[in-house]
Length: 171
Image (cartoon, rainbow, N blue to C red; front, side):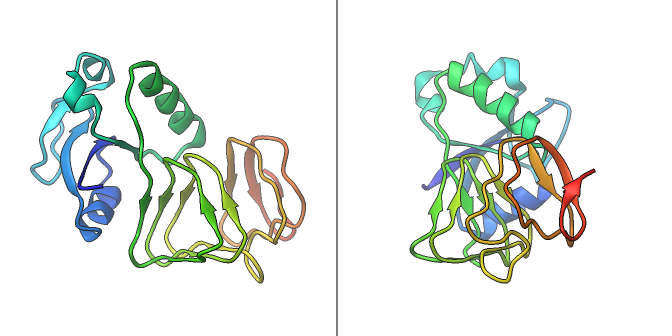
């Protein structure tokens, strides 16, 4: 991946892309905003009018909120865009871990062996996934879930929402 289009101009994701030496072709966001002097290509509505060459540049969806990420993914799939993942070169990912497309893995994240991270998942700075981690091994988490800081997930989660505490419970 040599260049990307960023959906949503979040500075921490811009910095992560720059740290990974990837070129930002442009940002899809409100036209009156400015992000580190990167070109604003237009908003979501404008994006469907991009030419085929521009649509071949993979997207990175930056918002944190799971349902917003899913909504944006569905919109851009309908408009013939492709996606890529963004993994910090300062994250530790086991060679046996599987990372789904569209995921963002930030600085200091540790993903241990035989872990599966689904599509369009965002793991924030210093997340720790696997043994002795916040999320115990063999745990399944459905779409639309946010795990709060310090929570310990000991059971599968099959209902969307925010989970906090030890053991984690729906907020």
